[in-house]
Length: 251
Figure 1 (cartoon, rainbow, N blue to C red):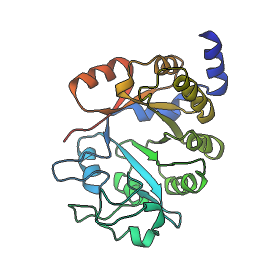
Figure 2 (spheres, rainbow, N blue to C red):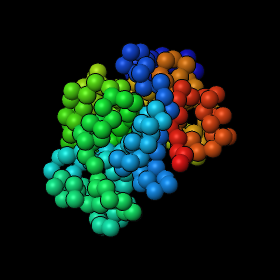
Figure 3 (tube, rainbow, N blue to C red):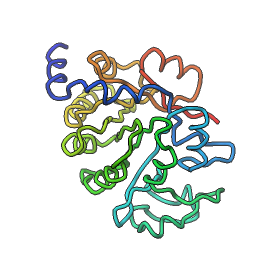
């Protein structure tokens, strides 16, 4: 395996430790601490996580006019009474759409960063379905300007981490990984290519795939491994043995 290790070190070197050290200090509530009347990616869910002293993992996508909003699904229907893609709506309209079962509207990333106010670490997952990531990445970078708390960006899409490596290298960046049953040749090759292209500072790994040779090798050469989404004691035990921090769901 040493040729791969050499390539890993050359194409996706270990991070500057001070850039990522503050991110591993607390477990992360997945989309905030939701449940029991608190909807995912809502202000109430984030406040609940902060009250526990836990970090926040949240999802961001961009409006039609280039503003980053905190919302997981590409379509509005599951979480609101509206229909259609989030990306087709302008910021002024998105600000008025209420989350189902809540008096809250869809929040903007800048508002949530103001709410957190550096009290806990934040992981921002950028929802980027294709290679055209510049508008989304630039919108998120602008929202992060002046923010002093521990924050990292991450995405399944390696182009996101690559963009930040080129344009904002001081922002900690992660690659989200799931093996999704793909342990044959194609899966490992795709993961290697994604790693080398992304040049991440950390991995966010599907807990269902741990232990993983790929994650173990990355961790062994200095890339922190976070794992999602931990939902029970068995997965928590797996996470303790194979990762540096968890992203969890619990009411």
